[in-house]
Image (cartoon, rainbow, N blue to C red; front, side, top):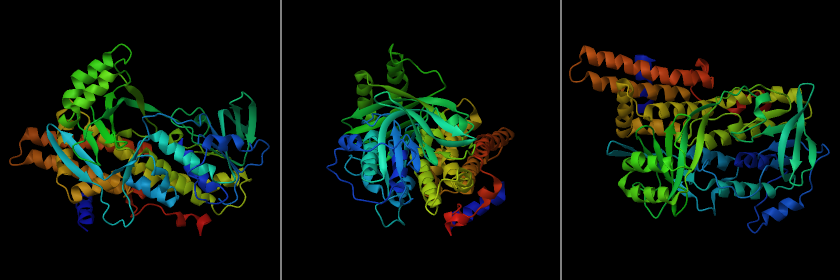
Length: 508
């Protein structure tokens, strides 16, 4: 109730490879319990490959009675530094997909919120989980282990066939995608046909260009390390350090390891090979790491196992094509600061599953394309909220020489530190528990108004009033361009709730 009053007051005053396996499990013929003693690679090699068109759905990278072919470049256990944090909203999607057991037996860690650190101060922000009766929380883990559990689950579905191979192109005919061309491990060139091809081959997708209008931005890169033999200041919480020049993330991904991700702005980063990166991390970054983690951080740098990854942002710009659809990072990316990628992707999987459920025949590719067109509207509340928040927070949390931006950063930290509705609202947005773009806009500007109020008290001056105006303009310049790129139009912002599946005429 307090939040609704706050939103009205502010409005009156100022105006997130495993993805493929989540989807294929539900396109298979039936659910069955996973065989925990399954020899996955033997099962994969024993599968009968589908190459003659007797397939309903092809999934690249990753409805009842449907025959599904999954083509994966590498079915081995991967060691990656992405997809290691699943927000509570994403875990709820796993429950809806009956896949929550995929985070079991992989030493996954429960996450109950975040801790923010800035200038020697810290504050704890808990997820608002009180209303949930089930074991809902965030989860953090080794991504490769999670993906393998997804693969094991997929392999239990009789009509799902997994094959290791490299897809080289989509097969098109008269403006419609009819399948894919790929090479097997043995080098055999094969064409596989299906009424529907789902492309979810990740951020480096070489198939997306014909299915969307990609505009990939690389605002920064991560330098990643594993910290061992240490305890974080706030157990079972993600840690966000508002450092100079940009944020540092730390969260536990196993009972013995903490992932540390150091954001480095720009496209050029220090070289790992010649030692510049190690020097940068030890001299510039280490002094800003909380004392409880600092020694392990330096040890990890000295160990030399530093991985780097470019952080990509790409708004969803679909180009609807009969016979194919994009999902995951091949379709839409956001800065990974808030760990929202998997939540967005799993939400997309749930939407596509529910859209496909009532269809008995997928063979009319143009009718199928029209049917799936509502997917792009239904996904916007969750995707736009998480994507916008990720982009906005990254800009706000980064250090700046601009005094107005510095005031906005400090106001954001202090606003969240107030607790109650001031932290619950933003954290509900970040965690995917409240996918409402309007609520995001209201909270974002409430931070700006809070910052202006601090500037004007106890006595306003022309300089402070000018700085307050600049702060509001700066906040507007951050969030509105992101909302525009995400396609968050006014009708969606003013909607009291996110679009529901029952609004689709196909799901009555």
